Image (cartoon, rainbow, N blue to C red; front, side, top):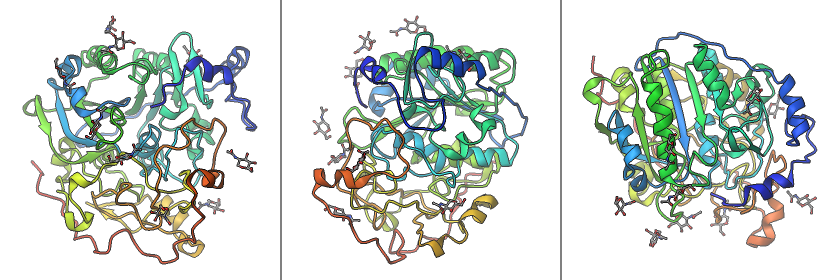
Length: 463
Ligand SMILES: *[C@@H]1O[C@H](CO)[C@@H](O)[C@H](O)[C@H]1NC(C)=O
Ligand SMILES: *[C@@H]1O[C@H](CO)[C@@H](O)[C@H](O)[C@H]1NC(C)=O
Ligand SMILES: *[C@@H]1O[C@H](CO)[C@@H](O)[C@H](O)[C@H]1NC(C)=O
Ligand SMILES: *[C@@H]1O[C@H](CO)[C@@H](O)[C@H](O)[C@H]1NC(C)=O
Ligand SMILES: *[C@@H]1O[C@H](CO)[C@@H](O)[C@H](O)[C@H]1NC(C)=O
Ligand SMILES: *[C@@H]1O[C@H](CO)[C@@H](O)[C@H](O)[C@H]1NC(C)=O
Ligand SMILES: *[C@@H]1O[C@H](CO)[C@@H](O)[C@H](O)[C@H]1NC(C)=O
Ligand SMILES: *[C@@H]1O[C@H](CO)[C@@H](O)[C@H](O)[C@H]1NC(C)=O
Ligand SMILES: *[C@@H]1O[C@H](CO)[C@@H](O)[C@H](O)[C@H]1NC(C)=O
């Protein structure tokens, strides 16, 4: 989103008062940290219902129309499935990277250096619970576990923390075994070469290749050049799904957040090659589809209700659910998802700056909330924490926010704060907006006045 000169940002450095030393960017600091950084590449072989391996590739800021119009991207989706109704969940970039890891945006409306409380669980907890290996690969990361705001990598290209899926989460970074799996792209190729790739991986190309500093011609070309050799590689492409998507349609920020999704790989049956999947999906579908595929528990957040990709749902019985205007209180077209609602990391002064508890009672198609999450949050009501998650596909946006999380502002501050933020210092922004702090919404009211209908798992099962 932010087209600031990278060199200026890099020169600003990261003299932050963090106790950890993995944020410094001076050449000598990088060399010293890299010399001791621990890297792990465990493997596993847990059968999935629709795929045994998933490689997710996240690109930057492109509208659906531009992506499907590009010949390199066309070459890819002609080999697989095009998702025609895939949507980002907020703006600017960072909300669309916090969401596919943890099931919410937590109000994030900036690309600032946010640190998520250790109590917030992620996909990593769900995968590890079932013994599924994982890896988070970031092109340009100077060494495994680097937690700086950005880095200008002379070999791999430029990196920014806001595009790293898992580095924001204390539940990941406080655990040395987990930190050891936040790696760079050189290590992806090493893991490929040594046949020790994880079953679940997330790949963020550098700022040039992902289109952030360039455009769709570059990102589609890079992605095609990256993926096509992998499709021909029998080791990695063995009942594998490659999933390619764009974090948001930031090309025109006032339009709906419609992006493309592309699925290729040997996990796609012949008769689905060259087809489209027209269900409504968003970045929470990346969680729900993986959960359904390996029969994982859930996070108890927006992952629970999100539509599961047809490729997976046809095997697991998770049929596509249709948009329900009665639940949504409005048509699909009235939802934009181009701006975040309020929460912990919102810079709006008049929103609830506390964590929303997962809804530990949710159960969808037999998938329950991870027992460890249930234990952690069971008594959250006593601490006054609320939940707003339901087993629905109708995801709130800024025009339809959860009660108490209405905010009037989009991206703010425009220039990201580069020092760690655990709860947004919203008071500093009250002058800009002229808004007072609210009284916290005391009623335990839920998001929607009508109770959601009984779960309908559809009838998509094909065997
Ligand atoms: C699609 O490509 C054509 C030519 O290749 C161009 O004229 C048109 O403007 C493009 N549309 C979009 C939405 O990029
Ligand atoms: C997180 O857990 C700690 C105990 O480890 C607890 O004191 C704290 O209130 C929890 N925070 C949230 C947001 O639930
Ligand atoms: C990638 O990470 C490894 C492991 O920390 C490090 O030794 C190497 O220098 C990194 N490569 C680049 C190009 O930054
Ligand atoms: C896309 O970006 C590349 C690299 O900066 C540039 O060479 C190319 O001209 C750009 N293409 C368009 C259509 O802007
Ligand atoms: C497309 O990718 C190929 C292979 O990586 C590269 O040689 C070429 O320069 C790229 N083209 C553009 C326009 O980026
Ligand atoms: C952005 O989208 C709006 C609404 O569709 C449209 O009115 C406007 O012209 C677009 N702006 C640009 C620069 O494309
Ligand atoms: C989101 O779209 C709406 C409707 O076009 C617009 O009013 C709003 O400013 C947009 N938000 C951002 C952050 O651009
Ligand atoms: C915050 O302020 C906006 C604009 O005045 C208002 O619409 C919204 O309801 C407020 N939110 C809360 C939680 O009070
Ligand atoms: C917020 O304001 C306080 C008091 O003026 C100041 O100490 C603090 O550094 C500010 N925080 C940010 C992130 O600007």
